[in-house]
Amino acid sequence: MIRIIGFDADDTLWHNENIFERAQERYRRLLAKYHPAAEVDVALFATEMRNFKRYGYGVKGFMLSTVETAIELTKGEISAREIREIIALGQEMLAHPVELLPDVAAVVPALARDYRLLLITKGDLHHQESKIAASGLAAHFSAVEILSEKDGAAYERVLRRHGVALAEFVMVGNSLKSDILPVLALGGAGVHIPYHILWQHEHAEPVPQDTPRFRCIERLAELPALLSGL
Amino acid sequence: MIRIIGFDADDTLWHNENIFERAQERYRRLLAKYHPAAEVDVALFATEMRNFKRYGYGVKGFMLSTVETAIELTKGEISAREIREIIALGQEMLAHPVELLPDVAAVVPALARDYRLLLITKGDLHHQESKIAASGLAAHFSAVEILSEKDGAAYERVLRRHGVALAEFVMVGNSLKSDILPVLALGGAGVHIPYHILWQHEHAEPVPQDTPRFRCIERLAELPALLSGL
Figure 1 (cartoon, one colour):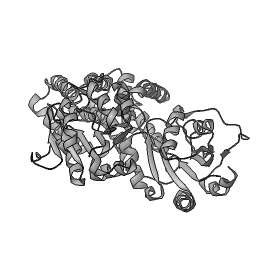
Figure 2: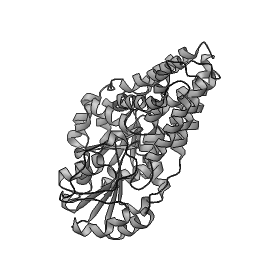
Figure 3: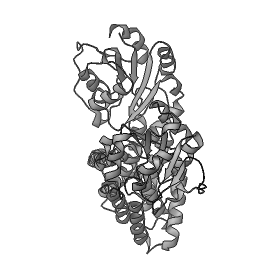
Figure 4: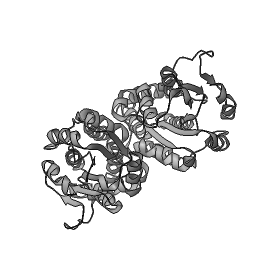
């Protein structure tokens, strides 16, 4: 019987990837006079992956990779003023207001009355804390855990710290790789709510729909009714 | 009677500010042909403070501020290749090995036998975790807390989470502002071990030497003997 619900944050409670997507669209336009737009995304993703061990997740690492990629793709021809514009793109991402996803403002407070809610997110500590504060949702969560990676070891640590039994736990999120698969592997339950954009790095094979303790739903409003069956 | 010791990490357990200082020296040299070196530090610090709410602590924010300042100081004249060198400076900082401060390798394991040790640091989640792993010290700490800010509210949250009574707690660190003053104000004890470089942002007025539950020492080896008097 589920007693504790873990929620992912980015693209589960509020929009995130659409902010990256809009920034990348502007980034492609900015580089268009130097380089074919179609190749910009491929080069940027390659830089991000090369820098991943260095920077970890988050907008600041993304910003540094956009500057590095722009210099590389233009063979050093890009001007400092254009680099300043690229930095400004990232600064706008950091300043972007938090926009809750559908149903979140109603469902999260309602669930908080009957369940213990944990916010389990990954990424940049400073930016995640700012978004949680701006979301207005913090008071509904008994704890917030910001992790540098969401793998099995990280979930085990968090659940042990909060004295959570896996039989009583469900994780809700948009990423099979980060939110669902590690929790199912440990023996917990998982509810997948896909977001319309998935960052390439989060790609994972689909989970068979008849997997025990796993559900896939389209929107958060479907969650409360299915908890008793997990 | 002290039972739990909180340790700051950067410039308390291992060198940190000297890495920033060496990077800034190279940064000044890189900009020397555009701008008088003496003004570079002032301009960089101003950019860092302007960006502080956006980026928080850490090397990635520092890197973004060095690029922005270089463009500003050169009025956009700096070349993309030089900007790439500035980014490389920051990447070297992130790759820098962790160098323990004197006495740390002996004193921390010895204290861990008689006290519960907490590592309480602030900054970038990903980079701090990498440094803790590389330090070889992680096993001596019963918990690691990486905070976005070290103020009274943050210490209260951490100590509550770990069930620590202030009468039994001492915080050890190099920053009066972040390690000592907030803990003394809550009623805990504080041991200050100055590092030879203090980042301007961490500046604080000295604590009178006769303040109860406060000591200032020159090196960590002095810590074990004074704990019983706190």
